Length: 317
View 1 (cartoon, helix red, strand yellow):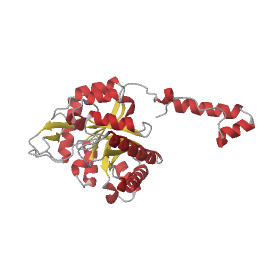
View 2 (tube, one colour; view 1 turned 30 degrees about the vertical axis):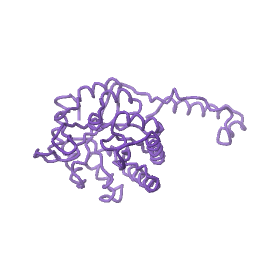
View 3 (cartoon, one colour; view 1 turned 90 degrees about the horizontal axis):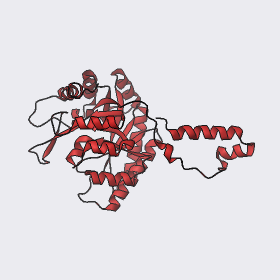
View 4 (cartoon, helix red, strand yellow; view 1 turned 120 degrees about the horizontal axis):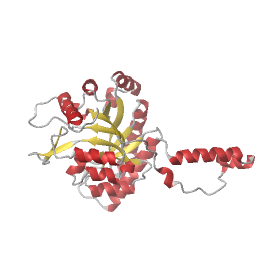
């Protein structure tokens, strides 16, 4: 996406070099700026043309480790995009082979689930290297976004923990950006980014140039928030979404994720919010696993959610 800032900086630099004396042009080329840098933050907002446009993908997590079957089924149901987990690196060591397979099935590689960002300094170096390697793989496989979850290491967190998490996410984002990959912070139950307040604290601590929000609607609702409100609040930082539904259940966690339209998430309000901010990007439908007491295959669950999107929400898939 080309922003006003990119446009003006490009034109300004070109004009200055063309019109400046040779010694000035030399300075602009890298030996020192002629003038102090101007504040162009106003122009950082991307230029959006037209109303909301959302493309719908589907996450392979429901198929567990069987990514080949996930690719086959998601394509057959008619979703144009897919999100894969890091285990795909073992199944397809050559990212170009994965790229070819996805192209054969007419699937856009929307996102790669890269794992979490632990706060433990002892594993920081290894963690950063792993996420960077995932970003490199994602780039070579033709993918778009790197998904990163906050740490799951403890139950209570301090303000310094949120600041450190934001710093780690920023460093991951910088390394991913080296490969042209954007990083999305994934709010998640049981993690440091479970509640709306925790999400706020982490995003405030992270550099918005490198860390965007990947909003998971099911986790956000279960964490005590309103996903539609989050869309409006973070619309200028919203990278993509997990379209996920959740219901109360007699399980240890007291909830379970379900097909779209089967739970408590208000998707009418969510799509109204997306329209109000002219969101243009990807929404990935996700169902973590087969539901307790419901006899459906992952493919059948994908069909249920697609039917809901088309016939209940009027969303094209």
